[in-house]
Image 1 (spheres, rainbow, N blue to C red):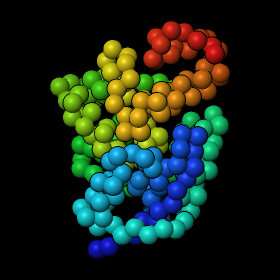
Image 2: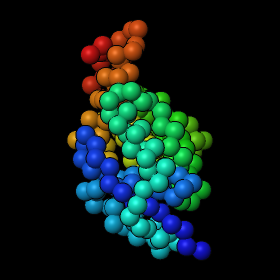
Image 3: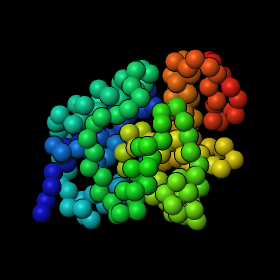
Length: 189
């Protein structure tokens, strides 16, 4: 069965992003210069049977609006519906990523322990790397056990920007100093 995804480009503060969605939900949101983008699109077509055409729909309109609000510091939870083709473990990891609160981070090991799989931090990292919906499924919130920035498909510069944006927005509404996950210090910005 062929399913249709409409494809459009959304401009953001971090560069253009490619978004693909059916009428049911968003299936891809990636930075246009991400090296893995071509293989992700190929997987959606070959493995999951999607046909991709240029166009717009209500889901793409919604994610464009929500991204603008997110980058303006006005949105902390995305409500765009998602359709995330993947295996059971990947979907479990992606759901756990969405549970990491805005402005906070987790380690791969911490995620694995929270999933009841304390020895699966590498598998969690691999599933994290297979996430096709950047920012909305916030894989940028996962850092190394030592607090260091680790791999991010959009690049370390973007990861730092996203973590800092969320921290600044979170800290601006905090009544006490907020802990910055990267610099490991309190800050009210």
